[in-house]
Length: 190
DNA sequence: GCCAACGTTGGC
DNA sequence: GCCAACGTTGGC
Image (cartoon, rainbow, N blue to C red):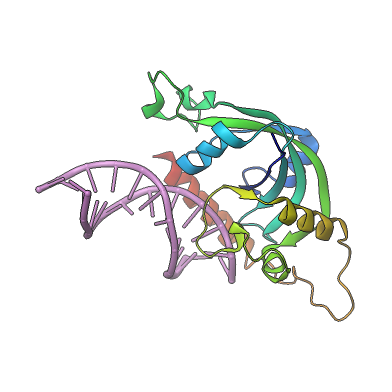
């Protein structure tokens, strides 16, 4: 089967690109969306290319390249009562509801290819991630799109003269961010 | 923090 | 099956 390409989202507070670089390889569990589940179960195979995307980050965008190191397999965390990804409705089902994959770290870009940049780059007009309101955490990407992002990411260095650095916008303030994070945690506890 | 967009749930 | 209420995502 032909090699495919994917974009996988994560919040850096949950798992950052540096965590990934340090680990070298990681499991990709906890996806609880049926559309993404179908990709994990049916389509994502060992050897596929992965764009590692950081959401709610500074800056938000594609931070690294990775590769699928294990094709889809049942997400056993869904059956672990003590785990945060436990899914009570998965219990006792003959077939697993949720799936996961493993991905191997390949390369961290010198600078993140930001969401703003993705929106500007010719050839990426159809990428799902730049679409407003697109929340799918695993998205299919074409080979052409993957190659463009790879090229742009590899070419990254300090901004060209006269160009405004995309990261100049400092985080509004760290306290607010932390608070927001706490709120999210609390919300997900129930 | 704000809030738009989206997915899921549940009453009917 | 409809759809309002609710929870979550995620850019800003």
